[in-house]
Amino acid sequence: MTEPPATAAAAPGTPPKAVKRLGDRIFSGTALGSGIVILVTLAAVALFLVIQSLPAFQSDTTDNNILKGESFWTWVGPIVFGTVWAAAIALVVATPIALGIALFISHYAPRKLAGVIGYVIDLLAAVPSVVFGLWGALTFAPVLVPFYKWLNQNLGWIPIFAVDEGTAPSGSGKTILTAALVLAVMILPIMTAICREIFLQTPKLHEEAALALGATRWEMIRMAVLPFARSGIVSGAMLGLGRALGETMAVAMVLAPSSLVTFQLLSTVNPSTIPATIALRFPEAHGDGTATLVAAGLILFVVTFAVNFLARWIVARRAEFSGAN
Image 1 (tube, rainbow, N blue to C red):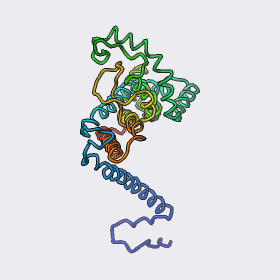
Image 2: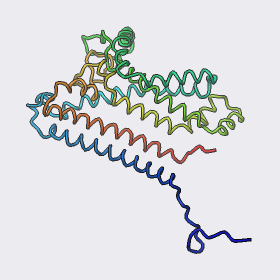
Image 3: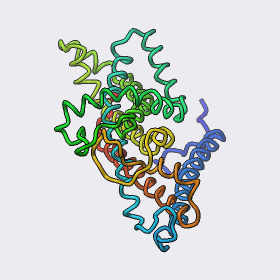
Image 4: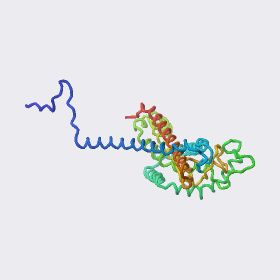
């Protein structure tokens, strides 16, 4: 019986190195190149924003048709607040709804009904934002006017539902709360889809073990499904928050740009957001005014990057719980 030939002149006691096939080399090179392209693109965008926004920090604001004599930080502060405030309200509203829909699809609904509901939810992601804006401004906002009056009359002692003395809640319904509710509808599909897929990946052994010990379906979900999916829920929420922070047309069609900081949700005067302000003010901007809007975009870029960095940190803290079978 003949001995198999040696594959290479390897040192004694060391395993021979595996020879990579051509397809493996092409795939690994493509993956590496794609990652480098993403990093280069991100760095190029950041560099462009920094270079183009420098005049906004260095020039005289009296000749700036956007700042009109005030400092950049005084001008950008209220719209940064409006951006974060609207996105935070949208996230608070959308998260429990997305979790409920995802749990219903994955653990409660019959298979055929779950497929139909999942398909409808996915279709919402394909609706253009301008359609959501038209719906929010022309249909949704007027419907909410009686509800806003009820909130102000019955819960006006809560500061966020109060309005300034001598004024009434918005008669058009176009408030920061309406914009946030429209954003909540827009981020529902991506949050629901991610939570649904994470819930479906819960190890069956964990679920069956909980049920075998006498747990009800909800107790099984609370003990086995939700702990396993915690990092995925956080990822879905942060992705939804990222879209809410960067949404433009839907907010621009519901809110008018204004420069103030207020937590009142039903007032006729509301803080605007960075994307909406850029979209509405860009046609009239020129010279240093354009640089000012680019600088506002840089602030939004930093805020979005910080949100995603926070999400990655939260997910990394849960990395030790893999939930593997």
